[in-house]
Length: 372
Image 1: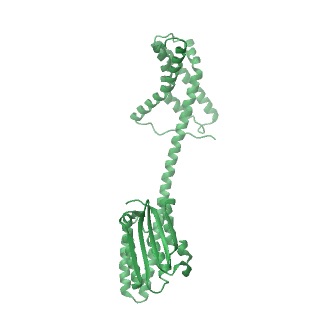
Image 2 (image 1 turned 90 degrees about the horizontal axis):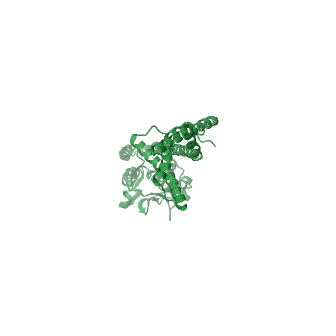
Image 3 (image 1 turned 180 degrees about the vertical axis):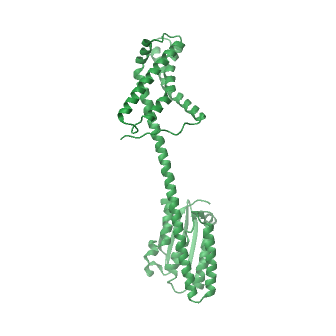
């Protein structure tokens, strides 16, 4: 399949051009060294001493001329490349290009011979002799320059395409995360306002005022974290504390909350507003339907290269409540959290919900451990 090859980037700076010139000289020094080695072996095996001045003058100019011609041949290779022009133009252009390159090389060799005092004249016959003498080697050299240029250009195109695709993926991921953040805030706000409204309808105005105050604190923290994908766990626990203050007013004295997190865990990064949906799920499906006292526990610890956060309740449990969403995690908050985990960490993070050891349910959030 034809591969379209386009022009490379704009001309490099002088320092870059000098660097590329040195690279070209180093590349063409390899066949020059091979040719000198062949001369040495041939003359040594023949029992003749090596005439190094003659060997150098008849070898080095050949490859120095190719180092000089390479930029022009490379330009022609990019201008007339596979997939860029019709095949007939490709054949004609490189046929003429090869003929000109070989002619220039023959003229350069005659000049080198004259400078070294070797037998060579500025006659058509001598130029033709040098042309024919190295035509097969020079044709291969021309083909290698063209093929190498195409390979280099294709590699540059692939790298540029991969860079664009990576930038696009990053942009899409950021857009997705932003959309998920925007989805979560209205969901939480609706639920919180619903709870405040229920308290007002029950005539408990003092509780309603306290809940509105806690809600204001939550909204302030939400605005402070706006646009931030990850925050230290200690800040996430501050948000959770305001949310639990709001909920404890609603549940009165029957809700007991405990939060345990070691110092290593508190300094780790966690997706912003990732614990609130887990706690909300426990309160809504486990504790709210349960009569009498209830307990909610939040635990965070470091386990090797992972941060593990658990939210456990002693509510009625998924079996008793019949709430499939509780263990499947199909609610808006939990589905949102899972989507954000996937966007941020891929398979390196997980969220599982399972029945508790005796009653209630246990949500376990596992993340890569990274310090803020």
